[in-house]
Amino acid sequence: MTRLHGPALRLTVYTGESDLWHHKPVFTEIVHRARKDGLAGASVFRGVEGFGASSLIHTQRLLSLSEDLPVAVVVVDTHERVRAFLPRIEELVGEGLVTLDEVEVVRYAGRERDE
Image (tube, helix red, strand yellow):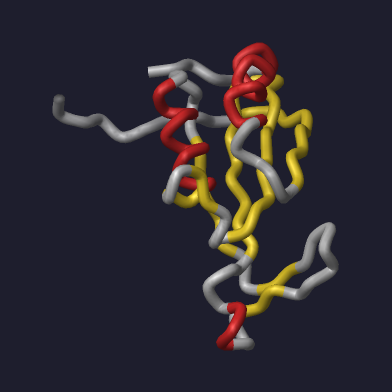
């Protein structure tokens, strides 16, 4: 298991729920690539409403747009590992926003798992 404590970098990819990469959701591909590359973890958060560069509002209140809600994929790891991961997602994000934030990891612990 990766040890993570102290200064770290948070990568957040904002995209749409319906954005696809080879017939799979972009957010799913990001999570799978992060796991394959051994990053500390990745989480996907589904928004209830939002807009981006197109200024088109996506909301769960409108039935026609309810399948394209905003999604944020968050990855936290060391500066080096996150920066090394950036080229792996470059090809995936045609539309969206990618941000990096300095964070401090106070606790990082997982469950014991049987293998």
